[in-house]
Length: 259
Image 1 (tube, rainbow, N blue to C red):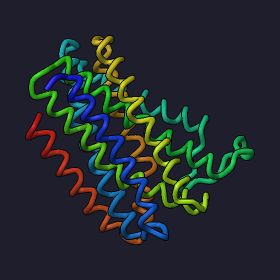
Image 2: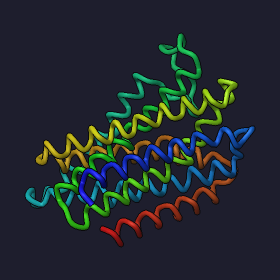
Image 3: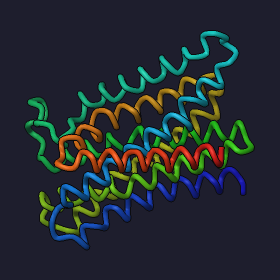
């Protein structure tokens, strides 16, 4: 398959899983149970961390071999910049999940705040997928298959993520159709950012190690800041831990086997 076809398959899958996750509002009358949400969060967190390590951070170090003993530098700096990027964005668009509303956004509706929070959450995932694909297209060989699996991994975790978000929107909007539409629109940022990531990575090869680490750091920050604490605060923390291990092992095997 050509690189264009592979990119279309990967990006389309990410968006499709977001759509399917959002459509769960038509099947459930109430929010997901704490146990189900715990399973979703743990599994998705494991997938995202394994993907960040094997598909973004380690390739960043490998591509910095020309720096000798300092081959870790782009990975370290890039990861910090990725986390700082999300902190900065967090000051612009407030997150509502398990957080109090910020004073500067009191004029906005709760629905708008939640929509912005979810959209912000999807930015690093789409960017990471695009950068991984762009890097693989430049490298060629098994890297392309590994990048496709990485994007598929992001898509898999999009389903529970979108499901866990669309139901609270349903409760706020009192409409299945509106909640579904909001969820789809929020997920649409991922393919857009993926295309941007592919473009940036293919025109700036010298920056690739830094970009890979940037995407990896932003994804790790999302997991550490939101997903793991939320799963840990549930009444099923052990279950979340096992689901995390399951997701991590699954993605690790896919990355190593096909990388």
